[in-house]
Length: 425
Image 1 (cartoon, helix red, strand yellow):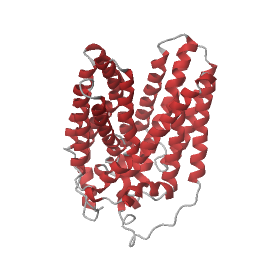
Image 2: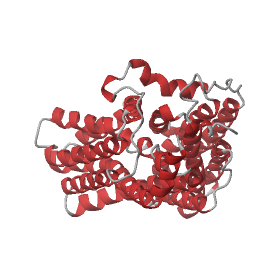
Image 3: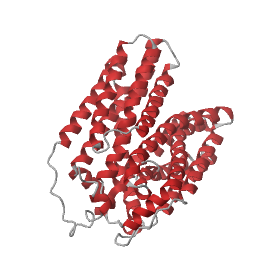
Image 4: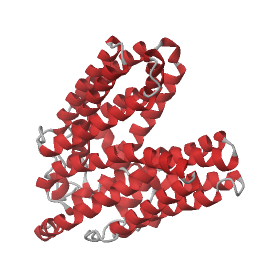
């Protein structure tokens, strides 16, 4: 990019980032809360928790399946603020429509609408995060990614809480409509971001070739740093995804019903504190991939100690300590994707990475449910072991041979300064 572009970034950073962060919190809160609101709505209006589960599955599965297409489309469009703002607005509109239609139309219609909303969802997570490098300078990005990680933490805490509170007080339909309105507000805010249109050279979004959908995956396969943090963080999610199942077992063990939700809340609050701490004093900025691997290792230590506790309160403290370690880990993961991903496929890298993490988390939850007969202690030790295995895997992938540098004169991706200057150690 030219110096003019960098100057535009710095000039737009002050007003743009608060707008972005507000939009991200609203969009991600809607995404997290919709999963609770849909189940409540199907139960209240249709008397069918099974329909609620099917709606959540219809909303969540495309998070993974649509990630390559959504990322490729985002990387190909010129006017990104219109694309991303429109996507978030459409997601909110779909939630609002579901608030009206569930239980009043054929279930298949509601399920298809949920699938359509889920296809947009990757742009609310990794897709939005990939925009930060477009309007912030390189020096601002580390703290910006920590703040963005906070938006995920806040959404994880507030989304289900808002859905449950509103769903109980005024009805799940109203709760889902409110979440949808929040997402539409976030989409409207994104229209105001100062993002320069892409220069020509990429095909229009409607003319993507099948090979373009694989470019992000190919980059993940050959770039040893991206490969390391992507697979290490995904394997780590096997254990983290299993935690909600374990909290049910721990609540029974401690005879403390509050622990079912309380332990996960403690983990989320710890993650929020960790992200804020890392935003205030980021460490390891030169090598964020190393922060990811160390974060995986230390995340497992408190969890391995939980089986030694006899009461729910010490267990909650250990859950919070483990969550705290995931704050810097996640911030550094986002920074790694931004630093090492070529500009031409950056959004694909973000959406694919987010999709893989969601897939592994879902697999971890399913595995924990199938193995719940082993007991909470064995499952917690298994979760801690997942973090160690993930860190070792990441180190092994990081130690692989680095590909030969491309010739900037013949490789247009490497010729982009914003991509190439971040590949240096």
